[in-house]
Amino acid sequence: MATLAEELRGARIVRRDALRGLTLAWYGGHGVHAYTDSGYEAAFWNVGDTAQDNASEAEVLDDMEDRIATGEYPWAEGEPPADVRRF
Image (cartoon, rainbow, N blue to C red; front, side, top):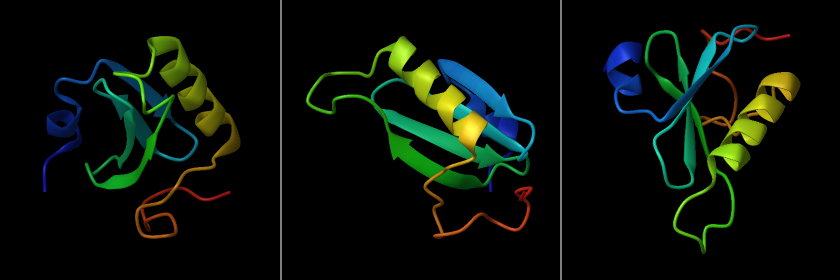
């Protein structure tokens, strides 16, 4: 498995959900990834109108901030991995 630093290489926007121990990354396009500290991709979702070329940076930032505030993520395994802090 890749390290978190390796996973984040090339990301255009990175935000941290410190409460849950997740790092959110957007590389362009519509997809946003949430990684655990170990580099495991815990969640993935799309932002913006997928009929357009790319989501805007503003759309991505707004979505990331909403997810961080609410803790609502579309977990890859249907529930948070064991190393995600739960509240």
